[in-house]
Length: 140
Image (cartoon, rainbow, N blue to C red; front, side, top):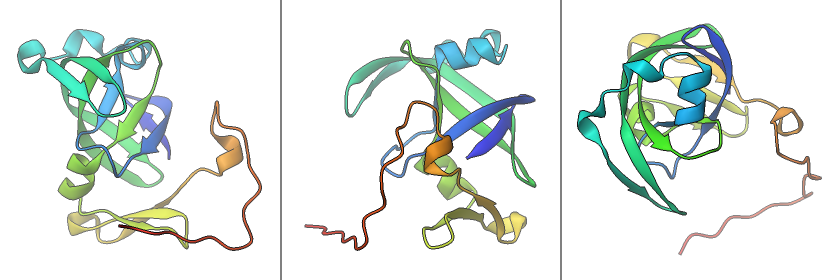
């Protein structure tokens, strides 16, 4: 999602498999907010890999389209620069992903405000692929 965090442009990834919204240390440094990391919540994040959680950034101003919210992020000690919207903040703001519209809808006080996803070809570091004519999904 094209967004602004602390007043700077950021491509915010949406990850329904992530329990927590996270930001890498290089991204926090780029945004000039690394000094605000609360180091009292250090730990280890595991999933696809393992990374040190340096702490949390709380109440960061995030703008996505016309939606302005305060978000919390865990800060990971990894070399890549990125920020990710995880399930914690999606549940907090009662989000619904509309894959037909390619948008995220915010519930609660935000009254169904929608923000469009970025086109796949726009994402940095992602190569566009042809869309399959038919797609299926199996869950077991």
